[in-house]
Every structure is written in C-alpha cells, then in structure tokens.
Amino acid sequence: MKIITWNINGLRAWLNKGSWQWIAAQAPDILCLQEIKARPDQLIAEQLAQFAGYEPVWNPAERPGYSGTVTFVRTPANEARLGLDDARFDNEGRVVQTVHNDFRLFNIYFPNGGSENARVPYKLDFYARLLDLCADLHAKGENIILTGDFNTCHQEIDLANPKQNQKSTGFMPEEREWVTRFLEHGFVDIFRARYPDRAQYTWWAAWGGARARNVGWRLDYYLISPGLADRVQDVVIHDEVMGSDHCPVTLVLEI
Image 1 (cartoon, rainbow, N blue to C red):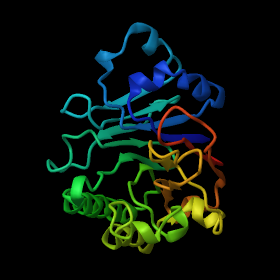
Image 2 (image 1 turned 45 degrees about the horizontal axis):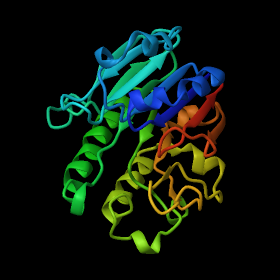
Image 3 (image 1 turned 30 degrees about the vertical axis):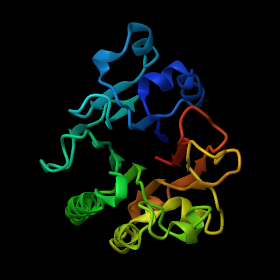
C-alpha cells in the first residue's frame, strides 16, 4: 500500500500547475492533502474529473480560502470522520480520519504558531487533544498513522539553521516537546527511524532562494503505531517535486 501526504498550499493553484499528473503517475492508494484553501464546489468540472478512481473525503475550513484537508482513497474507507471532536479545533478543517482494515489514518494540518507566535498556545492545545484521542485508540488496540504537515521540526537535524531558529515557531522547545510526547506514547517517526542521519527537508521558505539552496525544514511526517513499523517498506521525501512550498512524502506499507 502506498500513502502520499502533501501540503499543497492551495488546491486550485496546485491543480493548475499540473501537479495531479505526478500523483497519477505515482498511483497512491491513499492521498492526503493539506492546506487546500478551497471547497469542492469551487472546482470546475475538468478539475474534478482528474480525481476519477478516488473517493474524496473533504474537510474544508469554514473561513474561505484558508486551511482545509482532503483525503482521497481508492478503496472506500470503513469509516470517515472529520476533526477532533472538539469545537475549539474543528472549524478550520484540519483533520480527516479514515479507518481502514489495518489502521486508522489521520490526515492533519497542524496549526502554525502565527505572527509573533500568538497562536502557539492554540497549537499546543491541538497537539494535546490529538494525543488524548490517540491514547484512547491505542488502549483499544488500534494501529494509527498520523500524517500531514506537523508545522514543527523535532530535532536539529530536521532544519538547516537550528541555532538561528530557537525562538521561531516550528522549532520552539515547547513545540518540539509535543513531538517527543507522541514518541513517548509509542509512536514511531518512521522516516527518522529508518534514516537516523539523513538531513532532508519537506518545506522551504518562498523567499531568498531557500529551495535552490536547500535551506529547509522537515515539517511533514508519518508517526505510526509500533505495530505497523515492521510493515514499512520505505519512506520517501520527494524533495525534487515542485508544485508547492512543501514537497510530497510517500509511505510504502506491506498490507
């Protein structure tokens, strides 16, 4: 089974760049997109036609042109749910849950800390709510895959300039601590587990030639339950693929 995650920074612009052609060539079983900034009724027929063969589960934000997620599945999910069952977080379209035969998949667009770090407390509360849900699911014996744009780099190896960004949202100690808490609760950062010394990034700022110079951040993750770790065949960061300020990341599972 192949799963691809990608923060596309605007679905309509991303489609207009021809990015679905790359997706079609990869032929994932599940595609998780974040920051879609659109509702399905805003797409024209030619754009919708590209999704043939997939069933989309949409979760657009209430605010127009903002946030939003969608998960495309080839085989219909056993169950689909939107959000975290918490009114504080569920109007921004940040989570799609789909349940499959072997796992529950969370497609997530985590909040950004915002201008002057004003939304960092909201971001940390979001992490806490998600971990509470996952702890309950793990207690029931479920295997979980968390994927998407975590908006946080966990370790210094995960960004090009760690020392200059100690006080920047996305690398503040209190943000990084929440990723650590997920690992302490049994989740595996499967890319880092397989490639402990590889400095590879998934997001680059749109200014200063950051991408050309590979001055990036690894913000897009797969955190998986330990029961799935032995089934992982590979995790691939496609940093050569354009179309967004993020790049896609593929998880290949033996299912």
